[in-house]
Amino acid sequence: MNGYTSITMDEAKEIFSTQGDYIILDVRRADEFAQGHIPGAINIANEDITDAEPAELPDKEQTIYVYCRSGNRSKQASAKLADMGYTHIIEFGGIIDWTGAVEK
Image (cartoon, rainbow, N blue to C red; front, side):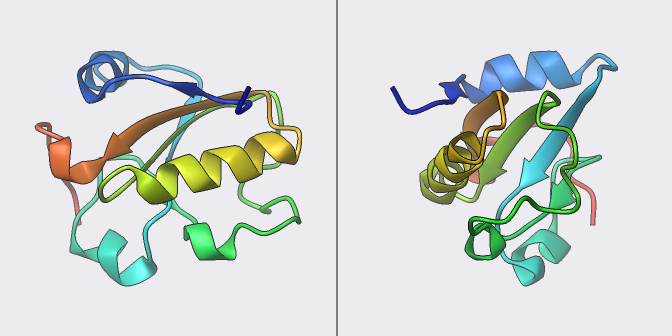
């Protein structure tokens, strides 16, 4: 078991169409994030997620939706977060498949 759940981009888009108590986490580099990201997302680069809990994610029970560019880094980051004890990690692939709005 990898400790996190994966859903499709369409499922994520449906979830994000309603307000909810969740975090959208973009794990691309800051320069990639600045070029455009899913509205409301926060940015912590996959490379910056080590074995220390990120200050931006203080609640290990919080639902966190994780994405990157293509889906590779989001899987890595999701596994690292799950290994740290985060219990509601949901990975949904890469922004290259995102058809919704993007903000800069």
